Image (cartoon, rainbow, N blue to C red; front, side, top):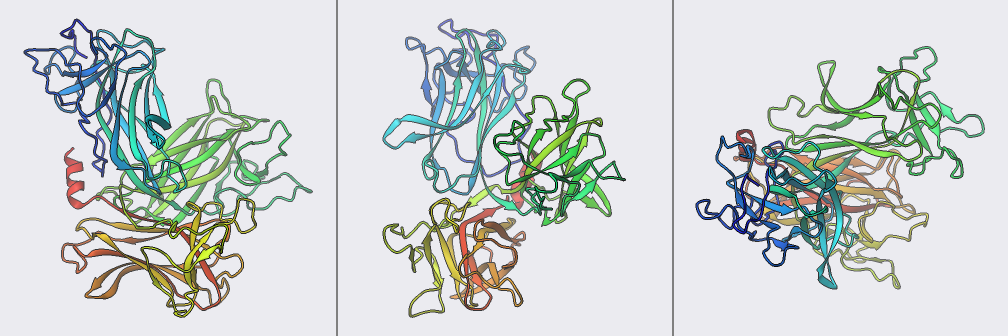
Length: 601
């Protein structure tokens, strides 16, 4: 806090911050900026209370380790320049002191969460460098509500922190599966000291953002092609479906794929995805890139992630000058590729046997962005000297919408199928079933995923059940939601799509198709606004692939403004096959008003 002392002669805290965030749909946190209780600076320098928060204070007698204090006036040597509002919170540095809050919001399947807090250190009594602070997302034990079970946490030390400028720190919770024990549980947030007594943290501007994500398809994302014949070679100097930039033009030995070694080999990559990885020479100019079919969408954010390791035989330089790897998201201005965001990864502290996930993040795409509706470009580039090699695997790209809209029975877990009985039910609760087989209702229903290891187990199903949909045109699933189309917003409907192993839709001409659609009702008649055609070609009975349909910004004059949102999944093929569907997600972008407010901030 300030250069001040608490009214019980208790020293307090100071400062926090981070970049001003783009306005987005946030989950409500009570007293998030610590403006309550209001401190009268003429009476007290601080108050040992924080309204709306659970305070854990080791100083039971005087409660001097948690509380709020007013920022000093601008121009004061200890004024916190970027505080949010007039007050901040202080937290004693000793392990056991904490601020926690159980929210009314719950963890939703298909969503990810980011807890952000602005953090600084007291100008008079800063924590030592060995006394970190911890941010956590937790849920309460159903059998003991007082027991808080952490899901993710992050510790932050004092390095680089200031007593006059706050810095933002975040902890991320990846996408939640409906089978996760915290799915549907109340969200818990925590800020905890984990050091020794004697110092104080300054805390402000607590935010929790929820976003709904979808996976964007990347060709040969796990580098399994071309397929290596282990009897003839363990490497191939080619990477199918990627553009290879290889400085060694003659032999092309700086880019390619290689076979992972056996599990008992000391060079075995323990967490590789599949049997093969890619190699990339460390010299600047070597690169892999891919232009995707997907396009940058207004109001969305993107995260490109890749597993990175260094070669166990010829690693990039880990001493000065250290070799770097670059991840980038780009677009084309005419024929010229232009980077939008880029992340540089040094070779230092990288393993040769364990891949480390590295990401580059593109924040919400604003209306003035030049890359809106341009194809997404992804790049992995060497940025060092010759002589070493990077090992790469498991490239992923996720698209995030800042608002998650509720879809009833989105993961098709109802009705519950009895594993001891028949493995399917011709009923899907809370959906309107369009089933051509009126008598037996055999074209729509839910089924239980088979056990792990079964030849037809769906490996990335959300929860325990999926839905089946007969491939003949006329079969479908529809749902009229309780939320309405809002002017200025864009929408994305995403569904995990696979095929039945025993009775797949036709993948040869004529290919069976699936339709994803947004509709509204004109009276009782559903009227499609937009739809996306998903062909069965290349789909799997073992892995679901995300497909999305996008609704452009809703105009105030559109006939669907204010009408309930309708979503549909419909077959558009011939009889004889079945689609496997799961994990329906509906995202909404910011509104036009939100974009304007974000610019003002």
